[in-house]
Length: 168
Image (cartoon, rainbow, N blue to C red; front, side, top):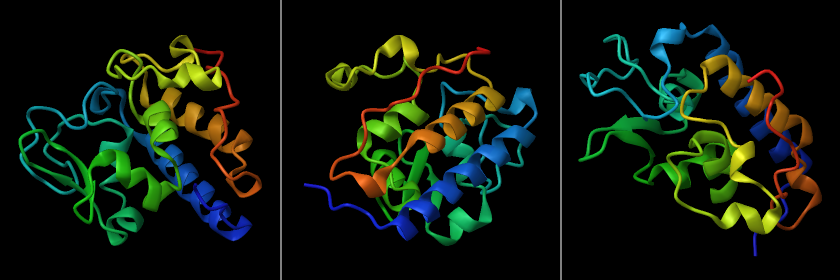
């Protein structure tokens, strides 16, 4: 069973998620693609300065505070974010305090996620963001999640109590 995190830990994770959301709001629309970790034209630049696209977690790998924590984009068969050798789903825990379900809910489009275990918590796939979501919409989604997320008050992570942003 997951240990309850302290209020201080939860606040750190909230600030990190909000930092990512603020960064996403600054991205030009043409540089964001919620359906891919990083574009096929990525040449391996840590800062994605080659002009490629990336998703929210892909762009998180360019933020210096998260890079100091070990978050990187790696080329190994499928280009994807990693942290200290861990795959992307396990990256969301140490960086953002999210469990696997929460990470998938925030960082994977409904079309790209075959997992159906969200329904056990009442999290309908239709409330998840589509592959066509913009960086600003993903930022709003993250901010809405942070407002309702209370990890310090529960043994297990919450049943994703927020709904799809209204201006999609």
